[in-house]
Length: 258
Ligand SMILES: Nc1ncnc2c1ncn2[C@@H]1O[C@H](COP(=O)(O)OP(=O)(O)O)[C@@H](O)[C@H]1O
Ligand SMILES: [Mg+2]
Image (cartoon, rainbow, N blue to C red; front, side, top):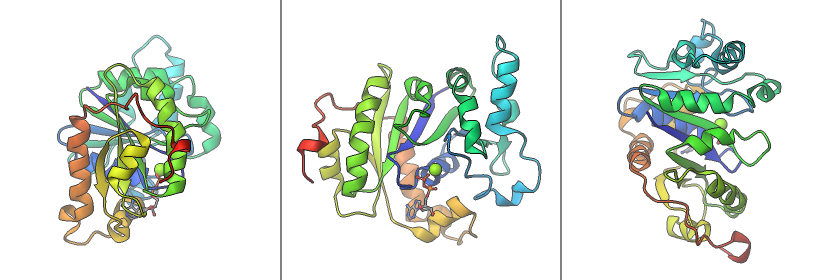
């Protein structure tokens, strides 16, 4: 079905937390694929209780299996594990050692093809983009890409050239949007105007709820209905129906002072 990518401009604004929240609130079968070359995060965080058991070889194992069988389809679902009990939401856990990130470079294109061909959507967490290790083939194959950032000057400044590069990568039908983690002085309209990319979601700054997702902290009874989870659910709805493209007329951030 469709591939959705979650990216950040760097500075840990909450991309992985948001990607996991999206997977948990997504309707239907969904796979969260940890494609950040800098390493995995969900297994030792939200799924820490499973770290001692076998989570299988994950992304690196899949890449090695694909390398060994270069003509065969990538056996994506064989390398995933359920994130929650009902098997509907699954995880392809990322590399543990970032030194293995370079082993993935020749694999991204085949992973992108397998993601699009999968029976069920795929949410890929790419982490910080813009470096030479960015999995561009995943961005090229994505139906929609959402950049998570804080509405601060350093984040917006870092986002601008990365969105510019993304503009050149997106396929004809690909869309791009922003998700603001409300921990900064600027409003959505201002960020949207400066970056020329629509804001698809605004998340509250909710450290204790976020820690449930990022660190596996014990959830409060109200976790599922918390503002953070409701906001992530609504981001997912916007993402699935995203029609906004990166504006061709995006002003260069260098010229625009916030
Ligand atoms: N909406 C939020 N509100 C408050 N803290 C958040 C939020 N989202 C993420 N965080 C926190 O920010 C830190 C970094 O999150 P993470 O998702 O790992 O960032 P990234 O993937 O962008 O590096 C974590 O401690 C996480 O709990
Ligand atoms: Mg991350």
